[in-house]
Structure formats: C-alpha cells, structure tokens
Image (cartoon, rainbow, N blue to C red; front, side):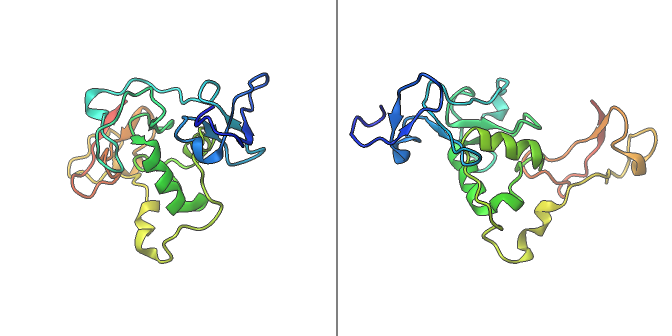
Length: 189
C-alpha cells in the first residue's frame, strides 16, 4: 500500500485493516512500527499519534537540528510529552535514540526519561537495548539535572535550599536544559 510492489509482509495490527507494507517503506508511508512487546506495525490511518498541543511560533524550531518544523500535527513533528515545549523532527529524535541507547535516552530539554521513553517507543522510535555509542564520560553532564537555584538573588520565599517545593519551579534554558549561561530564577507556576 506504500510502494505498490509485491512482497509486503507487514500488515497493520489494527483488527480488520488489510493494509500491508514493506518495512523499508514504512517511514515513507508514515507507518509506525513499535520495536517492543509484540512488535506491532500500524498503517498511516491507524498509527498511534501523540496528543500534541499546538506549538507557538517560537517553538517551531527543532531543538536538535535547529531547523524549522512542519505543522505541529504532522508525522515528522514530535514533542516531549513531559515538558510539552521540546519540539523535534522524527528523524532527529530517531538518530538521538540510536546513539544514546535505552540507558541514556531522554528528552533533550527537560531530561525526563520515563514518560519520554515510553511515549517515543509507542509512536515508533526505535531505541536499541544497549549502552550509548560513546564509551567515556564526555557526556556525563547530560545526566545532571539542576534542582537548585543559582541566581544571585533567589526570589523563592523559603530560600534556595528548599527550591522545588510547592507551586514554584526552576526555569531552565529551553535549548540545553542547564543553567550555565544565565542563572535560573524560581518563578511561580
């Protein structure tokens, strides 16, 4: 149903759907293959989709390749389900997953692992069950999550040592998720 050639051995997992396609044609046909559990595949009509909120004009850039994004509801456009402000191309996050492996794959912005990993797997991102391709501690900083305010004048009423409690949140850089260039301020949610 994608290329029109014979030998398509993958059939949509939706009961009653007769669409078949080749595995190499799945991406071109906007089909989704889940690389876990029963390894289900879905055609472009029945594929699982992310529940995405429309992106603002400033969020229309992929945080991985920094290129402009398509419409926020397309097959090639994805978002982090945890933070809802990290947008990226499907191909960009797939390359990231292949390099990071299951042990280091996380949202490039908020660094959420659990929700992000489960959602990416369900929408067809293949995450290899292995260690990352880098074999030294060059990327160890990626595992660091800032949980303390480093601003010179912390605005949190209970002080910087108790930040993160209550309706306050630590604002991090939307591009890299760290506080190196500009110290974050605590702002009410």
